[in-house]
Amino acid sequence: MKTIQLIKREHNVQIGDICGHIEPNVTEDCLFENDGEIIGFYIKDIAKYSAKASQLAHIANKELRSKNVPKSEMKRSSGFTGDKSKEVLQYSTILGSVPPKPHMRRPYPTISSVHSVKTAQTFIKAMLMLCHESEQIIKQLTPNIYEKQKAIFDEQINKKWRFGNLFTSSISNYNIPAPFHRDAGNIEGCVNVIIAKKENATGGNTTVPDYGATVNSSDNSMLVYPAWRNVHGVTPIIPTKEGGYRNSLVFYPLNAFVNLD
Image 1 (cartoon, rainbow, N blue to C red):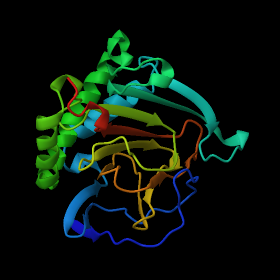
Image 2: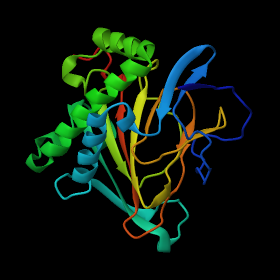
Image 3: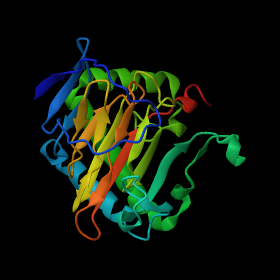
Image 4: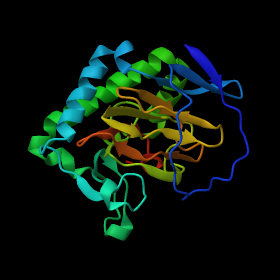
């Protein structure tokens, strides 16, 4: 697997800016290196490293798109253009640990209510098993990242708040791009996992302006990256046929659960 050197460059992107269309320039399996340290990687097809992970991603994607799983829904342009002719259904589902949200009159942490929905159990099981398989891919390709994150979790995260061994939470985003942001709520020193499922759609690529890197969100791809580290965005998702979509299956570690009983 080749290694890409991430070198900082000047740009004018700020948090909150809309992320427009950017063609991906990271399209093949690679490790990301910054200042002599491997900080993440991209693989074009997880089936190459784990047939089980590929099967689980397929099951999770199918279940999410069914009526079995509760979702937070919205309907807007997938490219933030305001063009009603390009409106698509968008939704997301959170699993695992949910941090306190005082503005929603819930000043305490909890486990996602989706876990109590009987029809969602196949989805939850598939996502949890996919999380474990993703951790094994991380261990295989970047053992330094795996051991570092495992040590942080062993020392600081109570088992009841874990989703898998290296994460606290999961979110599945269907047809949702993102303006430029930094995941400031994540545990510093840890990585996220983003597995893409995509059919008859373009875009949905993760772009990091600090390095001029845009990662191809191809179907069955996997991006492992420290989302707390840099400003990044997700490019517009445009269906090329009716029913086209891009779904991201994400695992992430939240700082809100550090040293929490």
